[in-house]
Amino acid sequence: MKKILFLFLAISVVSCKKSEKKVEEVSKPKVKLHQLVGGSIFVKKLEVFSQDTTYTGQTKQFTDAYYVIEHPKGNLMWDAGLPEQLVMPEPFDEPSGVFRIQRPDSLANQLKTIGFKIDDFKYFAMSHSHFDHTGHANYMKDATWIVQENEYNSVLGDTLKTKNPAVAELKNVKKINGDYDVFGDGTVVIKYMPGHTVGHQVLYVDLGLEKPILLTGDLYHFEENRINKGVPSFNYDAKQTLESMDKFEDFAKEKNAEVIIQHSPEDFKKLEKILSKK
Image (cartoon, rainbow, N blue to C red; front, side):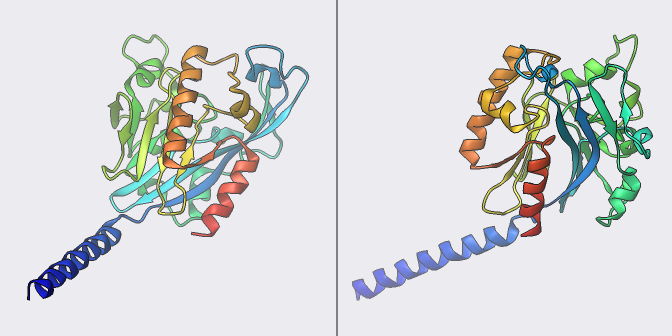
C-alpha cells in the first residue's frame, strides 16, 4: 500500500511540474522584430574608425538599420536612421568629406510596408544621439523616449546653450541610469554600454528563437571592428569603449546571443534570414 501511495505522489509531482511548464510556455509574451533601412552610408575615409592609421586609404559601405519591436505591452522603435531630408535621388557628400549618405524612403512609407503607423508606438529608444541614429526621432514625439540620463543631458540638458534639434520635439522622456528591462519580463532589455557616446546603449531582444538577438548600436561598426576591438577616433571615451566591449562580449556569451552589428550589410542580411524563419 505504501509503495502504491509513493508512486501516486511521484506521478502527481511530475504532472504538476509539467503543468507548470506548460503554463510558463503559454504565458511567455510573443515578441516580434522588424528590421528597416534608415539609410546608406559610404565611408570614404575609413581611418576615422581607428585610433591610428589602420584603415588609411580604405573605404567601406555601411547600412543604417533601425528596428521595430512588437510586444503585447506596446511597441518599441529602436534607432531612427538618417534625416528624411536625405530621401533624394542622388547621395549627399557631407562637408567633412568622410561620409556619402542617402536615405531610401520616409518613416511613414517604410512603416506601411510592415503594417504600422507612426502613432503605433508606446516607446522609442536610440543607441545614441549621433546624426545617423536620430534621423526621424522627432516624429516619435508621442512615444516615451527611453534614454540614459547622461546622454539626455549631453543633447538637451538645461545647462546647454545649444540643444540638439534632432531630438528637440521629444517631450515624453523616461531617463534611466544603467540597464533597463523595457517590459519587465526580460524579453527586451536595454544594456548600458558607454564609450561611443556618454550614454551609449545596446538592445537585447528575446524572440523565443534558438538564440536571442543582441543589437550593437555603434559599439562596433563592422566585423573587423569587433574582432580587433577597434575604437573610432571620434568616440567619447576610448577606455570606456573597450570596457563596454568586454562587458558586451561576456553578456553575449552568457545569453548565447546572435550579435547583429547594426551598420553591417552582412549582418543586415543575416538578421533578415533569421526573421524569415520565425
